[in-house]
Image (tube, rainbow, N blue to C red; front, side, top):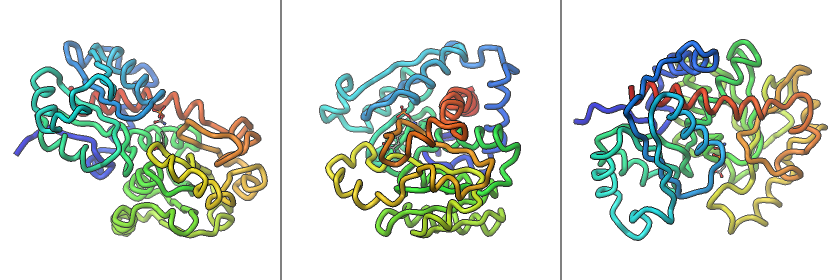
Length: 303
Ligand code: CP
Ligand code: NVA
């Protein structure tokens, strides 16, 4: 039995989320300035594109005194057919942690099972836990507490799944509106509902978008076509049309509600420019928090 810590899912850090958020806030406030990861290296495997995740991990490692290696699909033998197990074992001899952004969540699990060093989920088709941590930090910062109603509108995707789990774990109320067939992952919904019984979080999943946004303190959406869903582009655009977060929908939320999006965003699809570029939008601060949350995750897993 390996004793390393991983972050594959929000469930892996269920009891440590408050500690990690506290660290993220300390990093943002420059309260931790030593170089806790001096001499350590992080391998970063990217099978999908990235701006925020790549740059925040790379800068985060540098600021913590460590080093990072960007390994794209065109670089690694993994993508020419080398087994995940060999890749995991070999990388474990060189580096102190592995971050991976990939398609199948099962590939991440296999990598973690075979690696001797901490493995971090930089996004799979199932979850995006690093994003959910930065998002929670942003909500805390903007609303002063997690005693809020979070409305998620649109595709019940990886970002939605991780937000659902983190909300349930932290006792935050979450209402999700998706069209039929676009609901979040069934196992994650069941897990979140079971956790919410202990934490007091209210979890609602419906196709009625107005119900969800009504009186919400936070309105959150993500793209309709995630990386890997490109073949369904036209169908998704039609099916999700009524789930656009535009000015009219935003007016149903609390007057002081904030708008969040993990980015990248497509204006005119899941969100209107009047919302994402308007005064209620916090998306750039949210993106900044990826750096602080990333440092907290790296510190927690690799120190
Ligand atoms: N939100 C997010 O993960 O952004 P990137 O795809 O740019 O990393
Ligand atoms: N749901 C999106 C998130 C991108 C950060 C995707 O998986 O492409």
